[in-house]
Image (cartoon, rainbow, N blue to C red; front, side, top):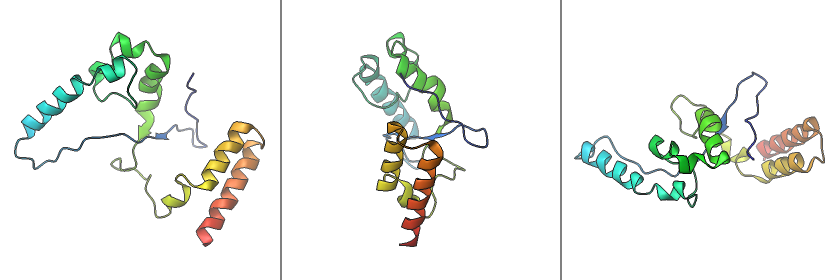
Length: 141
């Protein structure tokens, strides 16, 4: 079962997610036709989510609201609890991107930190102290 989002020191919840998106441009010759095509395309991909064979979250509310999709407790929780607080790297007004993002994104320091949490080999404070030391060492390189 999927857990609840962690609450930060400020009392806020947040998460980062990585959608597989299809881009549509503002200056396309036919905006309406492009929108109609994408709606058709995703409506016809519904079985990926209603038969639980796809990955990620459905892009249409109509798919997420089907009994077939919501019968999966984890999928339903992703939509109701996690999706509302998630942002992407480039979310408007967001601060997820910063100069040293590559130091914290999918690096050995982050992997080691996650493993220390999951294995319970360190207390949370010890694991965060170790993470901070490794990240600071990376910044000095």
